[in-house]
Length: 625
Ligand SMILES: Cc1ncc(C[n+]2csc(CCOP(=O)(O)OP(=O)(O)O)c2C)c(N)n1
Ligand SMILES: [Mg+2]
Image (cartoon, rainbow, N blue to C red; front, side, top):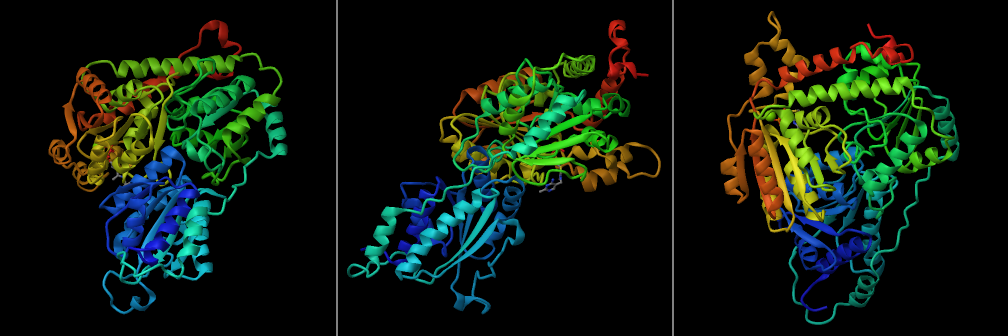
């Protein structure tokens, strides 16, 4: 094998085996110790190689790819602190059940613990946050070691997908020289290596997760008996909803059909959060109670709702009102359905069903007898929801931008079937509060595993790099500042044909804190936290505008502060290829007060006396004060 050496061959074999086990994208950050791996990735025709300077951004980019594709991307970095920058993305991958294959290059054993440069202890660097760790050791020409390299790559890919998807860490050591050297003739190990390169990785067939038939029977019986059942959909990421089935792509429409089938067969209303994949694309035939968070903030409404069965799908809902409902209704049986994770922070679930939620919905729907007659309880609930949305619409009238208007315009304008990525802090809550259920399907990507405000731009750029269509990101100004180097990755997307549209809600600081108890304490007079302290330690306004940053990274940029201007900017951004940063400037201190006013109005409206003909039948209205 001329022009190369064992290091290069070793790295090529690792890449080849990972590719044949399912890796399609490799994200390389520059460095010397990782030279063999970087070269192998760059020359491979089986993977796409992305080069990203900042390992923190690279980690989130790979995570965004996994969110959109369900496949593990491979990360490659040099030795030293480089790998440590992957940590936040690794934590998020672990908690969101997203596959990721992290390969850190390392120095040989003789340089450890002896003050050699760029040398740290990389063994189990990410502790318990990875599903598996393996130490590849130094390249070794023996046939059994060469076979084991291919096996180790296949194992790493497998462990990133099953039994629980998540991050896997491989530490690979190399001794200098790191670059390919011209060999005088064929290497003795070349024939064995060539055969392995031809063969690829051993095929690992991942077990399919099937719902437990007994649990299905029990759930069918519960549904049939329930008079006031709820189908509650919490955050769900498309790939992690697939019950650990590698390579099975998430079929959004099919998932939404399964939810609708269960809702129809059971007669239960659907309380779907914006991140659940069940709100945008909801079937018009089902009763969607999308204003449930606002409605459930009212204790009187919670008491009137009094569900007797809750089927909860996905990760725990973000809604505080819903958490309060669960806490106040200990008698109500709650069954949690999700493929992975113990999704019960209140430790009060009656049962947890580990399976693909779509499979559970289909199985239960198919076994239920004829759908029940629509109950007055359900009618009353639907009316309360409709009244809430009338109030939300009223709140969003007028031309001046607010957080709510930005969320509404973005969600309602996103091209049908496209990806909407949403940042933590207020944007994810605004999407819930201001955007009703609609039959227009959207894939909503989110970062609810550890709810960080970090890496959101990089993640959206990663999703864009594997998605066939447009990606829109809605995030806050501090979140954008946190991931400013992510804009460099957005520029990479500029070369691609489909648009990446980044909408930053510019409210000058972390205004979420004004909606939290600490903010209410500052607003109340007396000896609470002072406004100045709230601003200094929590809201932290930066008085920055992002136009120069967009210019630096070569992105199209628009600053808007009215509804028509945002509408125009969005239409233009979705219509052009490449990346656009839209800075939507909203008044910086009335968001919390507006949200509070709206919630009060919704609570008051939900108590309005019902029309007389329903009053005698409807439990939800009958008990209204
Ligand atoms: C990595 C990380 N650091 C800090 C936080 C705590 N945090 C939550 S929201 C927030 C402020 C976000 O501000 P911005 O992005 O402007 O959104 P807004 O609150 O204005 O909607 C902070 C600092 C976090 N969740 N993640
Ligand atoms: Mg902000």
